[in-house]
Image (cartoon, rainbow, N blue to C red):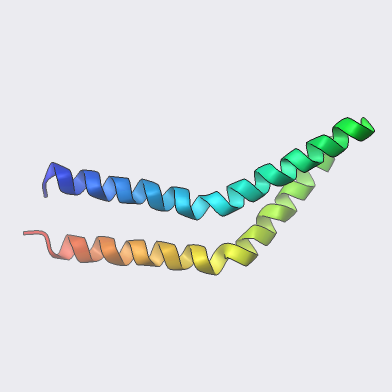
Length: 88
């Protein structure tokens, strides 16, 4: 196990984390921005108004992108196990 192997696995893991988390994160930020604009224009500053739509958006994001996320994670795990099996 060389240092380049460890760095390449670490790099691949970080890219996988970013790739899997990006859709839900972007969706949450977009809903948060829309709720903030709505609160600023109506001057309604209720905490649950900001929290509940984000929770619903994240849940729907997991429903829509969940299969794709799982496929990406399974592919990464398969590649990692294959790389570990080929180590001297």
